[in-house]
Amino acid sequence: MIRRIPQARDRGIPDATVARLPLYLRALNGMAERGTPTVSSEDLAVAAGVNSAKLRKDLSHLGSYGTRGVGYDVQYLIYQISRELGLTQDWAVAIVGVGNLGRALANYGGFASRGFRIAGLLDADPHVVGDRIAGLVVEHADELETVIRQRGVSIVVIATPAAPAQQVCDRVIAAGVTSILNFAPVVLAVPDGVDVRKVDLSIELQILAFHEQRKANGGPIMAEEWPDGVVM
Amino acid sequence: MIRRIPQARDRGIPDATVARLPLYLRALNGMAERGTPTVSSEDLAVAAGVNSAKLRKDLSHLGSYGTRGVGYDVQYLIYQISRELGLTQDWAVAIVGVGNLGRALANYGGFASRGFRIAGLLDADPHVVGDRIAGLVVEHADELETVIRQRGVSIVVIATPAAPAQQVCDRVIAAGVTSILNFAPVVLAVPDGVDVRKVDLSIELQILAFHEQRKANGGPIMAEEWPDGVVM
DNA sequence: GTGCCTTTGTGAAGCAATGCACAAAGTCGA
DNA sequence: TCGACTTTGTGCATTGCTTCACAAAGGCAC
Image (tube, rainbow over all chains, first blue to last red; front, top):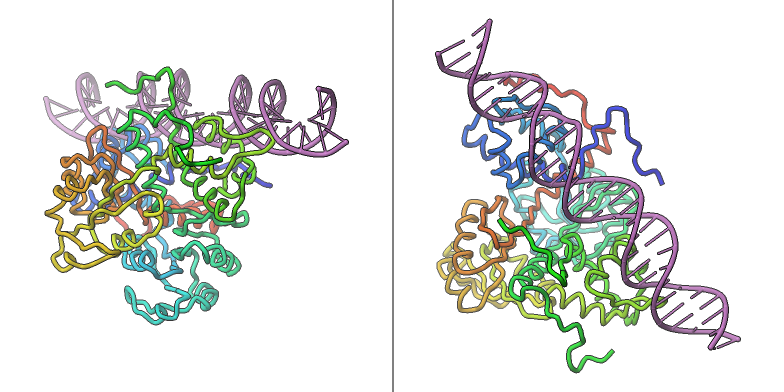
């Protein structure tokens, strides 16, 4: 059960910081398009929707890339954050499950522009196999291991229904993949060393509903009993 | 600048806890389907992928619904969590932007089963308006305010491209909506009292790429200079 | 009943993230 | 060259979350 051995030159970046770097990157790309040469932590913080002290502390984890009295060079900071996030290299991604969501992901422009290349679309449904989506032909899920090994896929997106998700997960791990983005509404069991990130569309709505209810009621309903007719 | 006045009976539930309740709910629903009558915090924690002490503390924020020596009654706990999250009532949701993602959301079964009723699909593209998706006819975005007011929509999902997102956001807020789920890759500016939750598909991939790079390199590349040919 | 066993609910310690506030470092005009 | 001004980078206090560890509570067998 080795947890994490702090290294001499420990560039361990806090998870909370890593999660915000893509946000900064997006804001910076917008500024670069508009031709802005430099930006202060205050302005960038506003654009990214965070506190400026937090932003400076986040950036300080990458190194000392600002100039006091001036701010940060937009292009240079884009490069440094991209490098830290690993976006200066090309990542081959396979999407398993080509339903509505899989199609949406395949067509989503935000991937290609950040170094994520879709190297395969796979589905178990023979009616879908052979379809051409976003320039790729959908392959049968049986080809999963072949596609991963032959095309150097290192990140797999699971966009299947809940039922087959764990099995797909097991197979891609067996094929050597250690980074998985899971859209299926299940908790995937994975061995140590495999990273799973989870996006659950309905969870976000449920959190909103919680807050919305709070606003409406000034707190949850106080009756803590079962409603009439429900038997324990 | 009133921040938050602690109340006598302060049922303020930590955000981190609220974010996990839907997870517990999903695990519990699975158990209910299998006919499991009660569950211990340990078993439920495993099913939800969290630490059991954390699970007990989370549940203790809702009240004392367990039985020592036995565990939690599955049905009863489902009811209590659902009530706390506001899922015992019906929420009318409108989806703005019926591209690939909007379609995926409209067809996603996880909403209806949790009290979220899709009350409107809207798009600005005349080619899409009139299409029938998931039993609804897509309406023109001009109808946004009418749809919200007449159908009692309290949660809006923004699934448009980045460009029109802020304008859509402003309009739905003006129409009285205070809960927004945003899929567009922009930071929405909203007044106090409006909740925005954000899902950015490419951010998750970028976080995965960061960790994947770490695994491959044993840390980020140490060269902190610009690559050859890049001029400051 | 009584006593053993299981499991909850929670105090307290530990850890991570946030935000303030300011010294240090750099720019720029005179 | 100098001094005023701007903005970074960070020490520190604070907050919030997680985890441990255990007393209290309840079930169950006999």
